[in-house]
Length: 153
Image (cartoon, rainbow, N blue to C red; front, side, top):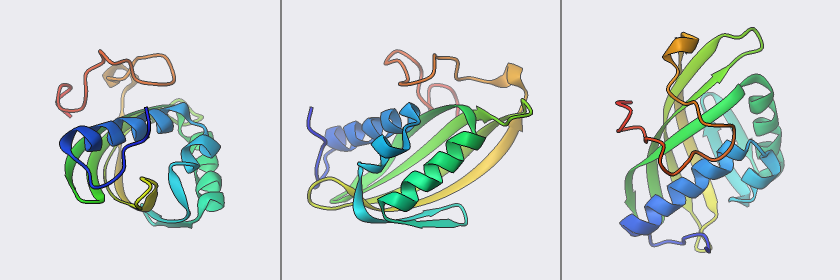
């Protein structure tokens, strides 16, 4: 399946969100970076990244710290070449402390469907391991696994 391009419909925006989730769940910085324009600009929390090389460096640092990372994204809104999502991911640090990180992202795409702008706001909530909701094997979330709304998140 080719990656959806703008202008987005409900169907293509939903597909784009799932493709992004699948990419991030791969935890492969080089693979993920290919979804962004070579000069893509990011704001992630208080960190800024410009271009694919900085995106790869950012994601490499991220996934070295955020272990056993599992992510669910959900479409919030879309129009033209923009998509807004909400997400939550679970991870633990090297001391075994678990977190659920909640956030929102605003995305802007070029005509080829590559993301040229990504603005993310994220908050981390410490959780007990027993409170985890994401238990699928590392990698792509299974199609039958509940989404954010289904989980009450």
